[in-house]
Length: 515
Image (cartoon, rainbow, N blue to C red; front, top):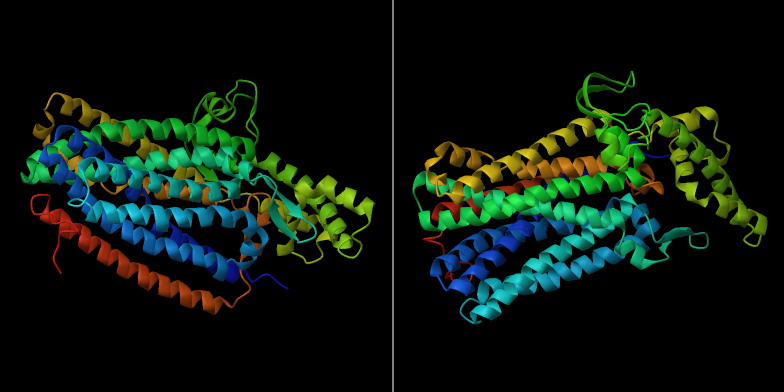
C-alpha cells in the first residue's frame, strides 16, 4: 500500500501544534507547584499570614493553569490511537506502560492533592495541609518523569526487542526503559527549565505589582523567593543541558551534527560554531565564527575523539540500510518458514538495522531489492532540517544565559534591598515573562525535529507510524483542535489576567468563592 505523505504531514502538524500548546501549561504547573510548597513551608515555620496569602494567591493561578494542562494533555494521548495507529500497534507494549502510570499520577495522585490544597485550608491542620502541598509538588514532578521516560525511549529505544512472532517491539527489560540515561537527563533538564518558568512568572507579576505600588509586601517576598529559586534553576538548566547534549552525542550523532551544522568530520577536538549561516545545498556553513575545541569537549568529553559530520553519518547509514535489507529479506522468508535456523541466524545478525531498511518503504515496497538510488535517497532522509535545528538551539541557549544574568543581577540587588529603586529592572523582568516559554518550545523543537525521520530512533520511521486514513479526516480534526485550543487560550488568558488584576489582597481562592 503506497504511503500517503499528505496524511503523514498533516498528522505531524496536528501533533506538533497540540503538543506545543499543551507544553505552554506544563512548565508553569511544575514550576509553581514547588514554589507553592516553599512558600507554604515558610508560613508553617513563621506563622506570618502574609506567606499564607502568598500561597493562596499563587495557588489560584496554579489551579487555573493545572486545569488547562489536564484538558489539553488528554487529546495528545488520544492521537496515538487516531492519527498514529501503526505506531501504537508496533510499540504500544513499551510506550503504553509509562503513559498508563503517568495517567494514574495525573488523575489520581495529582488530582487528589490539588483538591486537598484548595479545599483543605480550613479542614486540615497547618502541617497536614503543608504535607498535601508537598505531595502535590512531588506528584506533578513524577507525572513529568513518566512522560519523559516514554519520550526518552523514543530517542533511545533500550530494553526492547523485535519479536518475529508478533511482528512488534516488546519489552525485554522494563528497568532499562525506566533508567534509560536519555530519559533521566531529559527529566532533570526539562524540570529545571520548568522551575525557571515558574520563577519568571512569579518574578514578572511581582515586578508589575511593585511598578504599580500594589501589594508591595507580598510582591517583595514573592520576588525574593523567585529570584533565589530562579537563579539556582537557571544555573541547573545550563549544567543539565550540557549533560543532555553529551548523552545525545552517544546515541543520536546525526542530531548533534545537525544542531551544530557539522557537515564533515573535523579533526579532534572539534570547534563549536558560535555563529554562522548553514547552507544545506552546498553542505557548508557560511560566515561561521568558531570557538576552538569547545564542541569536542562538550560532545565527547575528550581531546582526541572527533564529532562525526553529516556526510560521514549519511555514508554510515547507507551501510546500515543495506544491512537492514538483509534482515528484512530474512524476516520475509521466516514468515513462511519459521523453523529455518539459517534464516533466523541471518535475521538476528542484522536485526539491529531493520529499522533502517524500513526507510526504503517511502520509495519501494520491494525493500529487499531496492537499488542504489533508493538507498541514497533513504540515507539522505536521515538528515533533519539543519537550519531550523541550528538556530533554534542557539536562541534557546542564548535565552538560558540571559535568564542567569537576569536572576543573578536581581538576586544581588535584592540582597541589599535596592531592587525596588531599579525600575528599569522591574520593567525588564515584566517584559521577560514570555521568554521561558519560548525557550522551552525551542528546546522541544530541537529534541523532536532532531530525531526525524524517526518516530522511534533507528527503529520506526515517522512516515510508517501514521494511521491509514483520508487526509480530509485529519484536516477536519486539525481545524477542530485549532478552534478548541484557541477557545481554551482565551479562557486561560481571561482568568489569569482577572486574578492577577484582583491581586492577593482581594484574592478569593477557588474553595472560598461562593456560587
